Image (cartoon, rainbow, N blue to C red):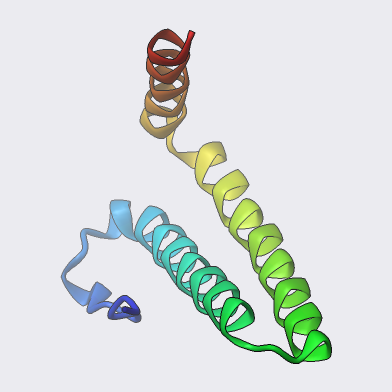
Length: 93
């Protein structure tokens, strides 16, 4: 299932808008990654599979670009990302 993007960003406070724009971009990229990987899993044509997986990989780069920008402007996100890594590390060791 794909997300409902673009969202109605007119209700977002001006000071939160850039963060919401970046998060919306990230959601769109995750949707695209999921779609292309699911389609690749469904096809038996090796050329189509290779192409879809290559495109999915490019979308992962796009996601990373949005994330890098978000982490530059959202200190709380940086802190919580690190907290999440720490918690996973504790649970998986």
